[in-house]
Length: 191
Image 1: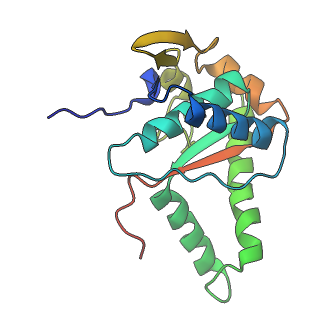
Image 2 (image 1 turned 180 degrees about the vertical axis):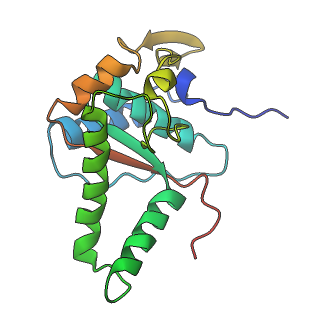
């Protein structure tokens, strides 16, 4: 038995449906949300273990940064939940009112953007990029390959640009709305 384990630095999208519906819808929705700044319903990918949810998130991550020039962050559900719980404990009631949750998460994203606007990327704290837990962001970006889209067992196209420092800088300064992707893969339980 073999398994496909997605790797962020060598992301591949394999179109399994003839009409490419899933990929096209994801691309359109992220364009509407990030570049056009339209209000859209949150997107949720559901499926059995190993069906490709994380790979889909990796594809969206690359598509937003490299094609749309839209800042996009990917974080595990565990990590964002921990941040919310820690913030709640700082509140007098020990809870976060619903109307404060959105602004709290937005503040996290603004801090991420501000960090990326800095000149020195050699010793960064946690940035919500897959498999980056701090350190030298330039080194992390070094080995990224162009995303491949495979149709009918052949590479049909690749993104014009690969994920790099120049792409990050351009996207961070684009004025596009930031996209947040949350992956539940690492989440073992919600206490």
